[in-house]
Length: 100
Image (cartoon, rainbow, N blue to C red):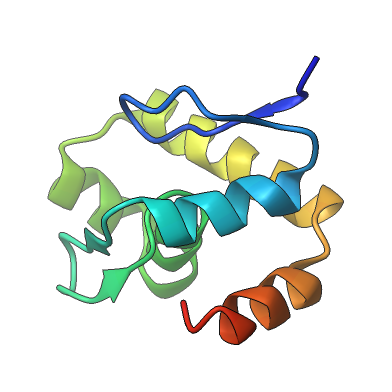
């Protein structure tokens, strides 16, 4: 059974490894426009990473009308992905595909 699932709303994709999920989210889903700064980023992990690396939690809460639970969920996703994924490999694959 696939361990990872795509967290993009409406997608039922399931994957054996986290790297495949990130590549899927980047290549198969529409891009996301950050509600804080307007930057266009890949949906999923990269959107979460952008929000929490580039903006404060307070900016995220205001822009997305989020609560502390939503922040914690996204922080947990970011931490889990970053502890398990070979992000250098993901970026290299995405560059080879012309997706970055």
